[in-house]
Image 1 (tube, rainbow, N blue to C red):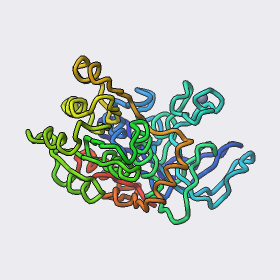
Image 2: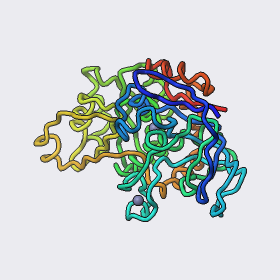
Image 3: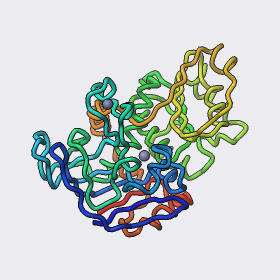
Length: 340
Ligand SMILES: [Zn+2]
Ligand SMILES: [Zn+2]
């Protein structure tokens, strides 16, 4: 079968490898959709955010796949050939406290699909059955793939920030993650101000339901947030990883506000005394979601009739992987998805 590897230095290799053999607790999926994510670029450049040097080029890339079950191991009872599923990216030990709570991405022994375990950018994918996320028949494979790391991650961040009908939420960075955040925060009832320096992204966020869109580099933006939020934002989510955005968000929060860091950044500079301590803010990191949250993610998508395919701007075949990663890296695409 064809499978995509990212050995670093912006190299993209499409290799022919055997279809994986299914163990007793595994399933084999035929891939129908598999998203490219900003974190894949860490592999593309050769400095993997998960797994370090072990990840680079050693495993099939792709951590946001969806497909159809085509074979099951003999111990698998809850899934059958023909089931349509997305895949939860963290393969945990299954028995530690984090795994038992559904947070396999916190398991000390976890392996990460697409980084330290063969991932989704291939014709077939082998995963443990417990990592499958069953999706409804009316949900397309592309939407199912986007429901995991893009929408699921932002749904979880919105929850941690406490988004509800009284919330005034700021979202910084309107790539696929921030756009999914606008959808999630609106569905959970919040009023949303969405910020990005790129005009097309702001316009798209407005179409997705943002109540106010702003260019964070506009000197009037902070004042506009104050007018929008009254005494300040109740919550903020940063998807940009940008230090200026971190500071703008912390400054815009009301006392007792909550902020989630989602965009990757190895370091930042903030002012704890006036930004955190005096206002008694809660600042947290948020990454992916607990597998036990997925039912609520599906319910939210269905109740609010959210069409996640809107977030996919480009689709590619696996044999177009080099073009796909190049265009994604050059920001010529927003959410890009391999389809078959
Ligand atoms: Zn991702
Ligand atoms: Zn575990």
